[in-house]
Length: 116
Image 1: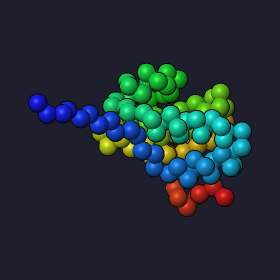
Image 2: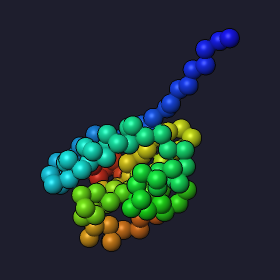
Image 3: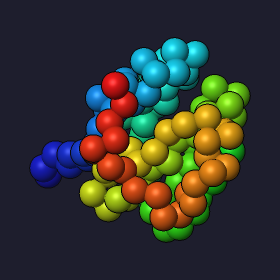
């Protein structure tokens, strides 16, 4: 008999530097965003439903777009997730008040608007 190997592929976050830029702009979010990064990098979501098992307060907007509450829901993080490829794309981050001014289903990441 041979050996059976099982490989678990964890999620990869695209634009981790963008997350770091966000906590520099909003210093109160640094620990929350670091925790989110670590948790996501140790996750293996297959579907939006498996994501919701860990993040009950996350809002699944579409089959791939999710909004996470950060720092006690004072901030919002929008990501697109390619579950099959195990990739999380950072799309948008801001205060709850800023979030109320955008269309969370259609907002896109614009590199030209990079935070300084």
